[in-house]
Amino acid sequence: MSEGESFGAGGAAGAGGARTGRPAPDGAGVVVCVPTFNEIENLPGLLARVHEALPAARVLVVDDDSPDGTGALADSLAARDPRVAVLHHRPRAGLGAAYVAAFTQLVAERPADVTEWIVQMDADGSHAPEDLPAMFAAADDADLVLGSRYVPGGRVVDWSRHRLGLSRAGNAYSRWALRLTVRDVTGGFRLFRRCALEDIPVTSVASQGYCFQIDMVLRAHRVGLRIREVPIAFVERARGESKMTGAVVREALWRVTAWAVRERLPARSPRG
Image (cartoon, rainbow, N blue to C red):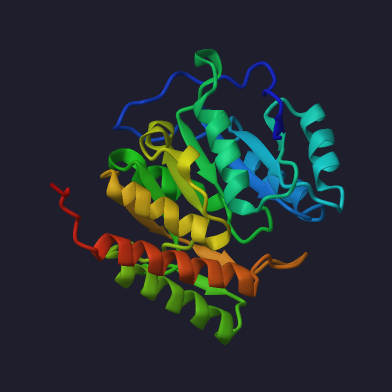
């Protein structure tokens, strides 16, 4: 069962739902969702960078039952800063389930607490909060903005050739199999209009790991959301261990193939 807490007084944003306009430069009306699992070394620095870039933004730390004490650290940081809240996701269920719990909570917020924009980003420093203003600027006519490694101007820093090749191949296969034009379907740095998450809807998403990212783009495409990509520099984590495993890769390959086959099957006519 997930456990959450509300943001402190002063964190409220006006009701969202408009399909035009961009987030405020200072982050008012924005919640940054940061999933954590064993990120005790990285979390304080990331929160400081987020609030340096966006002083008025709220941050929701979604801790997936970290055994290293990340959840307790997040609680202590939230106790000192009303802009920070923590959602404890127990027992550990993976990245996708953590994001679904966070997005569901934010979409269901009371009108007085509702936010207009939701950012998702990693806790390990791979995503730079300093790139958020450029993503905000692209949101005028978009429902979902992707921080992209694979559009012109985007890049990956300090990855091995093997890992970069695996990522590019996974993106290429997913685009081909699912008939998507998005260049970076597995990236985890994203900006959603709150109302876009209502359109998807997120409660039906069961994918985990990097497959969750593909699933969300596919669902956004299916319901006709406007998707834009903004180039970013993705930097390999300096501390801690990557969560990429063989099981994560296999899940993504299996699910993408299943989705592609299902979409290509002709609709069955009713018997009679």
